[in-house]
Length: 235
Image (tube, rainbow, N blue to C red; front, top):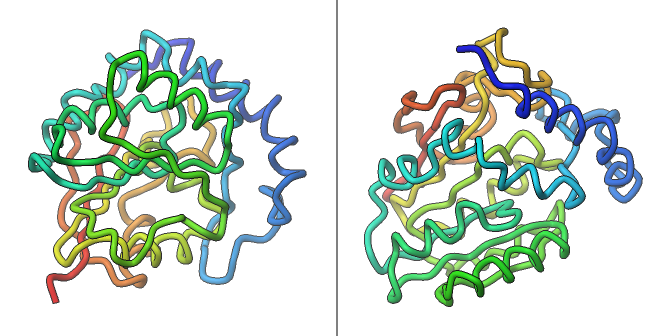
């Protein structure tokens, strides 16, 4: 499917202008060797300076966020992790889904993103969430979190220490809890997305299953992205 101009412009802008400042802050630079066991180059983290791109009007058509949340069948009252939540584009939808008895833990490595997220939540009158500032090596998720689901939307490919982070996510999930990756399809060369910001299902499985997750399914109803579902074993 042919992609629209704003998608290419947004990704290019983030890579060209914002990645260098983030690279200087992180000792594991995007152009450095990946952590041991990671068979790919890590993508740079999108800076808060590009936050407007996260709420572009075209995103609803391109990523169908409401349909994604609906398809995940998250129970009311659940605890859900929005890892790399940015400005909260999915956070408020998850909060509505779990209801007032549930909660959403929204994490990000940039305090500026979390400040915008909190403003967005206040504007919507949403209170059943907490924002957590994390680092590239500390996901900020206690082992007794008991989450039903962890959602990573266009985030996993930017984790500088993916195995370390996913082990922390694994412990934060309850037995049988799911982790869901939404990633642009690496298999589609027609997508005007930088290769570092794409992942294949096979590539995701090769990295995540050794951490201790079980592969569940792939949902491919989005125009340009895979929804890849794993779960923590029940025992």
